[in-house]
Image (cartoon, rainbow, N blue to C red; front, side, top):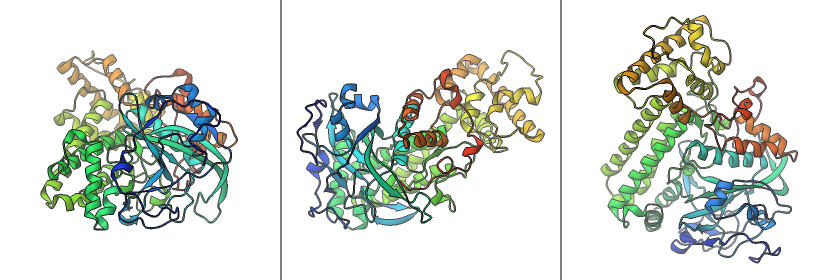
Length: 544
């Protein structure tokens, strides 16, 4: 580990560190970095592993701006050294935190930051706190039997997706940088006993807080109510200061707010067709942020039962259509963790009802907006939306392309009659189909489009809705471009050969997912057939 002095003499901003968690919560008394149970402590101090030949692949300019870093600073050698883990800046105090979690519905005990090392909390010029976290920078006491490292394959996916989700308007942790370490890391991608050597990489993740449901679960599971109280009080004061001083009522209010934020996050996932793939409680942010991008994916063929995770292929617990229910189950585990501080079930159950109410409201609003409707009207829209979900499953239908193309559907709002044939009606959405719909399927699709037209005519009478405003509204919520797995895999294939052009191209493309970007229209396409079964292009493992 290089000293805090900069050997190259290059500036790297005036980053001010305010490491609040370390100042207010107890540290692991064991200074040795080897896997062990960390009792009566919230974190362990640990240094990143030295990287032999760090190299910057890419950085996100918007995240750099949050930290008051300039482009020149981000392209400096110091930046690369610091955010690969080779150098500490004054005020950095690297550490890994202790948490537990339910994985696939079962309590897993102590988990913790096994592949993540927090460098510290930056306080920017606006007074905002941002935690800087290196993923893949080496082992920690929570690494269990793993090496704490990450490979380029998974790191490209995390870096790109973090920023893609932000620009889609989905609450998420961010990614500042992606660097190579210069060493090879062995991974068994298919868990079939054939490990391969892959390039090592590090992602610097950024968030106001990386606190997870599991940070509370671990202390309740151990019966450590005092440390649980310290952790919750710290969270209230730093992440939810608007709720007031910590106390029983504040704990309940915090849970209610977590339920609201989680509901909004899940509604956004469903809106854009995102499937997280590993919704364990240790992968659930207390701030309602999407966290831990492993085997994720976007719906291509609309299938509520689809999961991108090979580990979940049998049970499909984390399938697209089950995400709202899993989030509620996870929140119930958080409520159980907070119970020792509340000592009453009813207010905790009431908080979970906040999730149900908020999710339903957000889901209905988004479903109406995706159809270009100013608001959700239960008497007409509930059946219309429900029937559309069935229509999308008649044949393999690309969700992103269908909704984006539906904005081009001419409802002929000025005409009393519409004598178009079924084929003519479905023509605008035909690019969404992986194979030509049968005649029967065409009839069903056209029937729904006629009902949709009638609903738009009704809205025109009620609010004056016209074709142009409907199209504009739809294109604000239905992205044209999402990070399809095959797109990410193509970027990975090139990056592994030392060509980072596609990483940069996708980063730029996904900064403006709702814009037409005609120069990038080739990315507005169904998954190619060659990618249907190829590793990394459909389902993925947790290997990283």
